[in-house]
Image (tube, rainbow, N blue to C red; front, side):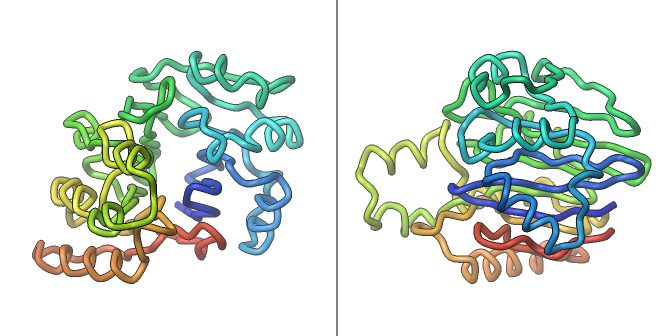
Amino acid sequence: MKICSLASGSKGNCLYIETGDTRVLIDVGLSLRETLLRMEERGLDPAGVQAVLVTHEHIDHIRSAGSFARKFKIPVLASHLVHRKAEKYLKKTSVIEFESGCTMNFRDIRIDPFPITHDACDPVGFVLESHEGTCGSATDLGVATRLVTEKLRGCRFLYIESNHDMDMLMNGPYPWELKQRIKSRHGHLSNAESLELLHELAHEGLEVLVMAHLSEVNNHPDHVVRSTGSFLADQNICAPAVIIGDQFRASQVIEI
């Protein structure tokens, strides 16, 4: 299993997952040129990708999903509602529609798109299961519901949101209305909320953890690394590798 966070943040999101004979991208929120460049830098062949999975219709997740799919003649997997909402990005694109909450098979993986809370029309997280294990991804969610927690249990790889430090957000420069949106049930998870979720998900089989979608203004990678590391040390388990999803550069290719 190989994973690479190509971008994570409000300016663009893209996650590469390779398991068995299948290679997919979750979201393509960068420009097509930047997506291809970052893949090339990490030795990943974009022509080998077989599908793009879309979490929701916000531009930092879907900007180049259609253009990438059209270039390499592959399908985009999106919910019916997201397909309709993002039609201008997916014109002349082969789209396989799914229903949130209903699992489906794609090549040798089982894909489980589960509903999350965010201010989008039909946002989802994804669990991808293959004979190599399970990967879970959930960002852009205002609250980690019981369903989210149950779906993400038992993963070898987790990609979860740690968007903001609450003190930095409330004392920062954002207007009050935006602060309220971010910390609402339809906004983003704080660092503390991410650790509460991780408390339910940490287990001996968790090998890699990516803390994703960090705010450039209301968070800091060093703070997330310290707090996450301290938390995991207190759990009395073998701590996974902890990686920060970066907005401006791709992570190393993680092989587990």
